[in-house]
Length: 393
Image (cartoon, rainbow, N blue to C red; front, side, top):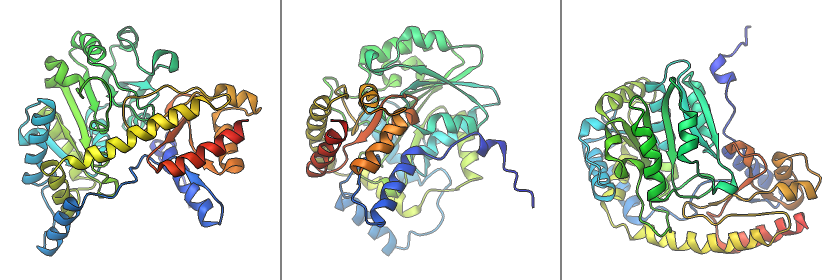
């Protein structure tokens, strides 16, 4: 039997964040005391009013296929949210509801990219951006911004990375994995560069939008640079804001010609998102938003604690962030102190010797760093950091 696999699947790797989470669970199942800080998943329960909406949908028999691009009711709720929170106006034909934010970006790359098209991705980046570009036979162009640059690329770096083959630029703010947020002025400066390149599409990944404690309110590059709206795509979802990771609902707003193409891709892959989850997502977007503040308060408290602790551990340096629920310490000195080869070996040392699972920074295009998720209790974080401190001593 010929076991030859496609060049597409051979060009990518499994999601490192999911792999770390799965490994931590497997070690715990085997009886080991492992604290997993790899998952990007809020530890709060989905709010009751959202769950009750889903239960009512089941009881009402809303369990059949829906429109491929989402129910009219949910699309209307998305339109209201984007107008209310972001000042962006869309029509139903400019909205696509998908099976999570990851699915939205996958649809975008499949619909937009041709072989050899370049996609500019600032690093550190979310692990799946480059691989989904590769699956679409595009070319990821990585623009690096380390801790000395605050993990944010400059307009000069963006301009230098643009070529005749550039088709897409990705902006993720607040960022996974760093939690860093671009200021309004910084986004406008990047937008000014993109305004001079009219054939480039701009993707704004806003999945961590409400998990923010910066001095400025949230704004994305499209709301700050209206001239980019006609060639911009907003990607968002309910997973992080409402602790609905397992419900798998994301959405995209953009120019109708592109959203129509993304819908075509979805129609030949997953078809519609889960009917029940769509009702729940509608309740989340239209309902009481106070549940977000509860989570935000907890995440900010955890952030302050984690950053202070990390900066007092030998060999680690950590910038404070402005949102999301990650810290991204520079571990270069700790790696050297422990005689480890790199960040992968360092994280392997932590999980085997300290019983703490972090994600190596190289998975995010930033060797020498690691990502710590503080989407867990202060008690668990304190124990995990005690273990890391002992392992780095």
